[in-house]
Image 1 (cartoon, rainbow, N blue to C red):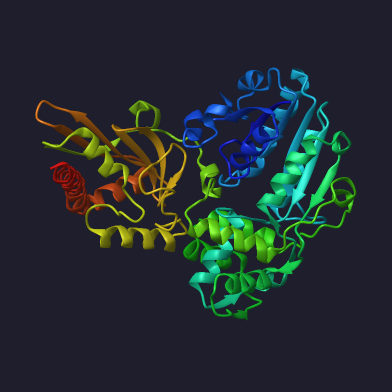
Image 2 (cartoon, one colour):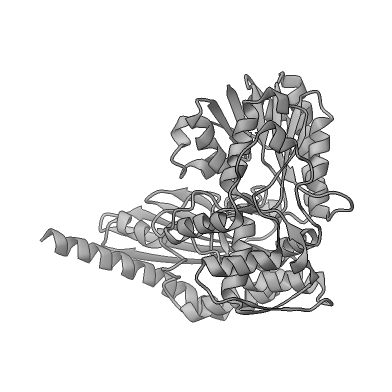
Length: 485
């Protein structure tokens, strides 16, 4: 079949596509930023179409000639995720009705009764899609366990960082976690089973556990001592979210959205999945074991954070009048080494490599960001040598890459404005020229005060960073010359 995957750059979509290709389907990957798919090994096997669900006019091409579409999109990283998801779903339903699409397969969230805003929004999306003229299969899952998944990463960080935890009442809520592999199998099998069309199907793993049990079982699989968990019933949701934002790679905003949902039991109650698609699902312990193996081997094909970037944010190349004055710090250094060596050095920025200067200052900035509810430096980077548009890098997001020439990062730390850090190397008659530029679009008076208060630190950090990049490039060039001789 001709299949469109909306959310191709997201956690689930990036793993579903190779499975669909293995089953012989022709896949069209739909994403707002085509370059965000460039690092995937399956990139050349699919057609990539740029479309935005908030822009209805872009959906006609995305659905042209398509038999079925997977809808794997959500806006949880946004402050107004309910409104955005509602609009996106309505646009998809309308476009699907006009296109002659035969089926939509949507991955939503488990739960019944009075739900959190997040879970309620996931189910509202399913209803909006089903109100259209195209049959919808809505798979509802609880937390998904896999390397790089949001639920797994939250559990991993909380359990590994905190041998003693004070926890709120939600740790006793029951949940039916499901392995990412089982989710992918259900999604792919649904396509081959016409009788699943127009149905809501609840899916879950082999175990029903409390979140406390999930953390203790994670500790056992990770080779950690049993965690001491002290329940504090009066611990507020806001404080829980702040704590999650401080200890895990999640921001406090996403943490609050999740904590709201953790208070609600998410367990499979409808046997439809067992009747239509019977299978032995993986237990929680095995799901954690597989996720740990991939994480430790640095073999994580997709991560939850990759899907949270909002490309509508301003970019460094936007005209100044669009968002206000742009404040800049520019550093230029020339060297005798080749451009490829300089590019190699700045492409390795962040993660284990660090920032080539004043590492203490960057660590303090990361800690301050965590205390303010941001993500800090904890996300690291996917690969120590390569980067791709759309993926996270510490508290930055990669928004532009030209291999061997440029790298543009946009800050996702807590700042009163928009900030970028960019590098460009060009060849010269004597070697190469590095341009390092920090740009900041302040938001109001607080943004300007923030920038000017940091000027002394900029004078300390940015020149040393540029010189550190050049030093690393020169060291690499020297090492290569030594090997050749």
